[in-house]
Each structure stands twice: as C-alpha cells, then as structure tokens.
Length: 315
Ligand SMILES: Nc1nc2c(ncn2[C@@H]2O[C@H](COP(=O)(O)OP(=O)(O)OP(=O)(O)O)[C@@H](O)[C@H]2O)c(=O)[nH]1
Ligand SMILES: [Mg+2]
Image: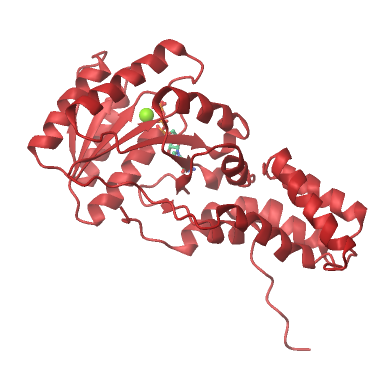
C-alpha cells in the first residue's frame, strides 16, 4: 500500500532536533581535526548520545578505527560520509511498505503503551488513505479510557471516515467484531483498529489484545494484515522492551515511530533496526494528521546528520 506522499521537508522538520544536537554538533566537533583515538572516542559518545545503541555504536566505531589505521580516512570531516554509509547499509535491500490484502478490507491493528500516539497515528493513516481515495472504517476499540472514543470520533468526523464505537466500558473485542462486520458490509478498503494503551508487562491487558486479534482472524481472511506497534521516539531504549513484549503477544509486523519531532535522539531508529526483527514503516513528525512519512532509511540518515554547510565559493 503505497499511499504516503514523500516529502523531504517533513522528514527534515521531524529530525531537526536530532540534526541540531547530533548532526551539527558532530560537524563542529570534527571540523579541522585529525581522526585520532581521542576524537573517535568522542564520536562514539555522540552516537550513544543520539540513542543509536551501545552494540551498534561499538561495531561502527571499530570499523572506523580500522579505516583510520589503514589510512583510508584521515581528516575528521571524512568520518561523516563513512558513518552515514555504515548506518545506511543496515537497511540494504529493504523497502518497507504497509501490507495490502488481496481482497478488501486490509486490516491494520494499532497497539502500544499509554500515550505513545496511537490514536493520532490512526488519524494520520486514515488521512493518507482518504487522500488516495480509499474508504476507511475506524474501530474505536479503546473503551477503557474516558474520552478515548470521543477523541477518535472527532478525528473520524474531521477526516470524513466511518467510525464503529461501543459504549464506554464495552468489551473491546465486541467493538472489533462489529467493526469487522461493518467494514465487510460497506466494502471498505481498510479497517483501522485503535486500541487502548497498555503496559507491555501487564499480562491481563496483553491477553485482551490477543482476543482482539483472534476476532479479526476469525472475521476476515488473512487479518490482521498489519499489526503496527506505535513507539514514542522520546522513550529511548525502553521502546525496545515494549517491542519485544508486544511482538511476543500479538506478532507485531511493523513499527510506527511517533514523536520524532520531539526528540534530539533520532538514532533510536538504528537501535530498533539492529535489535528487533521488525521494520519501522512509518514515522510521525508532528501532531497534525498530515505529519506522517513512510520511513526512508537513506533520507532519514541524511537528515540525522544535518545539512552539509554550503561551500563558500566567493574566495
Ligand atoms: N509532537 C508530536 N506529538 C505527537 C505525535 N503523535 C502523537 N502526538 C501527541 O501525543 C499525545 C498523545 O497522543 P495520542 O494519539 O492520544 O496517544 P495514544 O497512544 O492514543 O494515547 P492513549 O490512548 O491514552 O494510550 C497527543 O498530544 C498527540 O498530539 C507526533 O508524531 N509528534
Ligand atoms: Mg488513544
């Protein structure tokens, strides 16, 4: 399902804090210096500071040392392209998109801990689908938090998509059952299921999610076609633990990395790549429904390192 408009400006906006703190910082650190052990130690600290993760950082820094020893690299500035290439390489040959079903509706189940941005992300996906002219049904399966259904209903209204809701406190699996019926009878292209936030270590609430998944499996062949785990980019390495638990419970197929605009540590995307066997598919770069981008590794790494300063040609 390639329904997302790619704009480099949005990625740039989303990564501006990371680019300022990490990219610009790195550039001024490296400028005019020799790539010696001391400088490489400082590069290592910057990568860890950007949440790239200890294991990945050690690997890349070791490769950097080897390249310096062999005379391949010398100047501080040379390290930028080297690091970018090593990071980009981790996604070689991958182009993650959202899975689309052979027969409609495609079912996307959205899960995650409290407050990470699930409902907003559902609205973002719905908006992109609408812009592509696809019909969408939203299932308000967060019947737990007061105001959750209303929050989604406001989005549904604004975006012009159908919503299936239950009474407050209703069994979320029953809401999903009705929503599946509704999506089938309306011949909707996509059913998006918004669920309540839950702690990844809460076994009871995780079982409730399994039940929702089972309802979808029974009602619609091949469903859910995607189980998107929403992670908050500002939550750092804890996001990895969340992914592990949700993955074991409901089989996560992709990650929606929200709130990238709110962090200076966008390197978390690399740690996710290297620690989890689940691709980041979409990134959230703001609070508006249009603030969503498909994850593009090359563009992401380029923006993380900030923009190359323009060459002064006047002298
Ligand atoms: N800056 C920024 N804020 C975001 C993004 N995505 C969501 N938010 C904000 O995060 C807050 C929580 O978003 P929700 O979508 O309600 O999160 P949720 O996971 O559905 O929360 P619960 O249902 O309570 O678990 C809201 O203020 C959103 O506007 C993003 O990509 N960038
Ligand atoms: Mg919500």
